Image: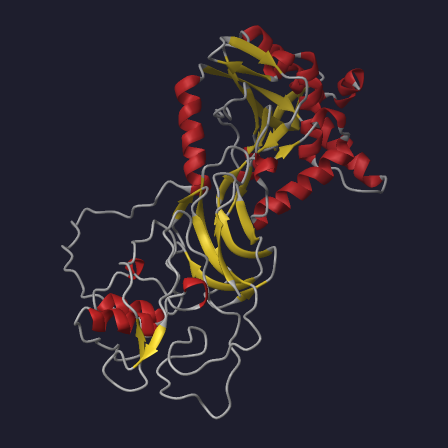
Length: 456
């Protein structure tokens, strides 16, 4: 005998409390395997495919696409298990094979895994009443002995999966929660609904077209004002970004300093590295390696502020976030233990996380826990910016585009490849001298990559 098990939105980790349904991967009536992904949700951190721990037939889904659900709320129900060997359809009432069959067909069809249901948690249960002939006023009709009035079920899925049964009850004003089904494990069948309507003296009004969706009468809607615009909900990743930026501006007394640097030698060093064969080294990886060296010299900027304890917490590891623009908005993947990686390892990790960001497969763990952020906004063709710190970090380094500009080089005017570097920092963790020293060290390494060798 089958059970109907309820699968709830699981805890997705990283303190997430809700998720938005982006796309259902299964329909009601589909057979699913254990750990098969059944729904794609968007959390405040990433897109996640949620696997179902049960195998069986999907009997109900909770929530339309675009709906936000809190963690722990029902996602779907699954009929798990197989019916007894002798169970077959015998006319109307089989919830998986069909309705309205006046007599069994010549060839009986074996029932698919039944849509039986365990009673929802906290609900009252009763033993289905026995059937006796001729109690409904015509020979051979199933009848029931009078019993105690059925109790209304607690919140949770009603043990009925047939759209026809639900529609029949809805159109006749019958609350399915007041019924105790005669099917397997209390499953409410069509015959249960018809019997309840006869007992109440209400002639059952049959749906004109079986399984047709119920279309409510349209409600007149007042025309929108001529000045009304398009409203875009701030939820999912976009909502989280908005909350973080607002909190950063609200809580962090930030300041920004910037400097122009001659990146000609850095670009030359990269060309030499990539000419020797092996994996290509990205410019972002070289900038990241310079950042980790500068943070080792100025650890004040690799910290966070515990506002409740009124303490600055200097962090032992450098988990380097980098801004990545995707179709779904701005995300900041995190390279763990960036200070332990060389330029080749950093290049590979940046490429891997960037591809995951573009395909929407980053996990929440890959988007949290950063201690410092590197933002290369030069890819958008701009020279400078004043970055907003990625709360609760203490600083962010911004890198503009590298363009040829007139520059005094070795006492003479020359055309050099120039980049603007900007540092936004939390003024609580350090003063301008420390921030300026950090930025100057980064600029020195950009202008003379050999300077970086001193910190390796």
